[in-house]
Amino acid sequence: MRRPLRAAPALACACAFLAGTVFLLRRRYLVITVEGRSMEPSYREGDRILVRRTPGRHPRRGEVAVLAANPDELRQSSGVTVPRKPYPGETTWIIKRVLAAPGDPVPHASVPAVRDMPESRVPSGFLLVIGDNQADSYDSRHYGYLPLSHLVGLAVRPIAPKRARRAEQDPGIRPMFQR
Image (tube, rainbow, N blue to C red; front, side, top):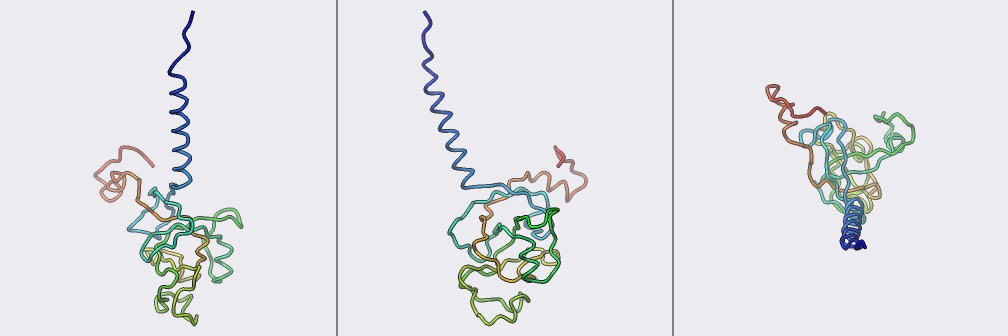
């Protein structure tokens, strides 16, 4: 007569625990890939960034935020041509540094889009964001305030291998893999 497997219940519990942990981590964190040069030198195109979802939390000045932005909405609010994805009306994610959070003084001199607005402090529920590479960044200088409701999360750290970045800077180093 065969004996039933005694390890089966323990294995089932371990699998359920692992699945639950993965589910909770995916609800709390996400990984994005940087497109474009607007955040250089902090983040380069192709870098993968770990982002902590932050519902209900207000970011502080200097933090790097990921926001959902519809290019059509930005175009309407600014009148400036917006780099767009292939499908009209789709939402894209942008990664920018928080220049001013709700309640912070409005930097009128460095953000032309809000230069003529009367408020001296950033209104509740809005942010001003800017790219680190200002020469190649489409940000609040062009479209003004972004609603805080568009905040997806805050960057925690890059997770791309540093060896690949060194290889880009020094042609004598060969990367172990191709992107």
